[in-house]
Amino acid sequence: MLNSLASGRRLALRIILLQLAMAAIVGLTFLMQGRREALAAAAGATVVALGTALLAWRTFAGLGGGGMTMWRVMSGMVLKWIVIFGGLIAILGQWKLPPLAAITGLVAAYAINLLAFRFKG
Image (cartoon, rainbow, N blue to C red; front, side, top):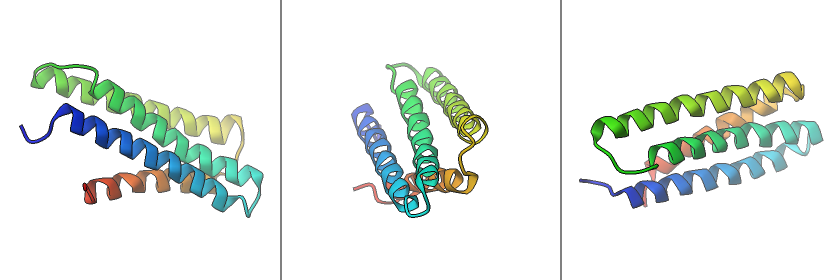
């Protein structure tokens, strides 16, 4: 076994915390344009962090064989995308926040995934 469950949990927690930090950073950056833009950017990134947290919770729910683990990962990924799409619908449709800021926050939070897996130390 190359990685332990504890290692995966630590990586997931680190990614979630970095995504939440990115939500604060993009929110503060967009604050120069206005409060609604800042809220949209922070909400877009926060939705990604919530989806990642749900995926991690589902994936690391317990022990099992390969098939059970694969099922958990796949169902966690489906739940993550439901949270992200539902969050974007709420941000853009219900609250009518600026779309460019929300998409920028979403992309910035997803960029954390690339960085976290690139620098695993």
